[in-house]
Length: 235
Image (cartoon, rainbow, N blue to C red; front, side, top):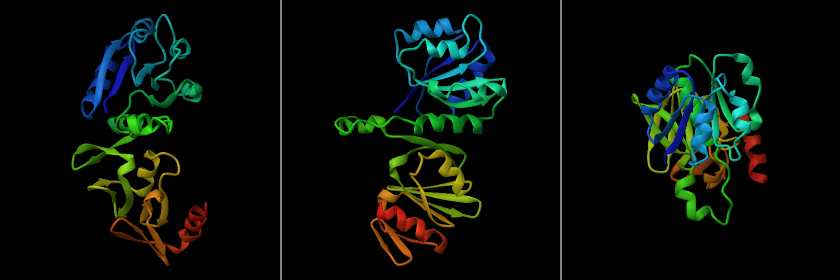
């Protein structure tokens, strides 16, 4: 599913950087370059988008004031040169703040937040649109960025400086720690059961002694984590 976005910034170099970063990721679709809030309002009156990259300090109409004029807010990633703005505006559907200049890695983290922070789909329509609304994140693997459907993740295993993300159909290896993947996931979707393993609880088939079973995998349960797992399973 493509993430349709617009850029609202009065600096052309900011547009160039965001478009360059987005070109490195799959399924990012630029809809419009807007150089002030008035241009953006005119575009959004006729079109819908999933995400706005928004500079807060612009002529004619400031960023927060612009957002307050929109009846249906898409996700917003704020780009700003001023740290103090990061304490404002969370009621305006802002998923992250990027302090200029920002790296590609920091940009990727913000985009992952926007993808993972999708609203829940009502149960009576979920089957009809499930293919379009599945939550996704990007992970770096072998010098490329791979898009992963969050619901396909079975468990995550730490192996030194790398982590293995075990999916229903494949295994992705990326550099990092368990905490780094947990930060990208929706709250409570991963539970640590061992110092080297985090699992997605809904995929657990069986717990027996100090082991649990997911699909054809056997995963150890650490003593420090067993009590937490027991509480979770009793809910």
